[in-house]
Amino acid sequence: MSTVYIVILTYIKPLEEVDAAIPAHVEWLKKGYAEGIFLASGRRIPRNGGVILAKCESLTSLEECLREDPFQTLKLATVEIIPFEPSMKTELLENVF
Image (cartoon, rainbow, N blue to C red):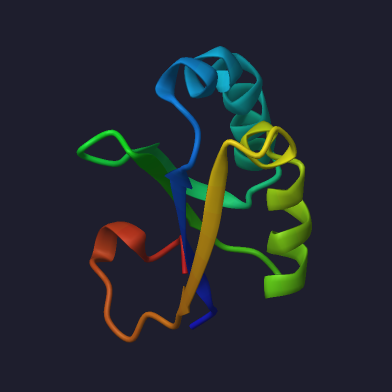
């Protein structure tokens, strides 16, 4: 199996500033999905950031992609990347991994 990445975004600015950047962030996410990098994404609960499930060639290429996120360029959120290698999965994910 290949490496999958859990990307955890934590907001460091007020939600008003984050909300203003959401349209640009969503466009950036759509690009990541179109390129086959992102598998799932969404808001954290409580709403203090977001989570992205990603699969790409390398940690370096993921880091390059994340640098283009408006949340990063506008310094609205920090990023934590957790790589893991799935050892078990549901049949629903057979084609993903």
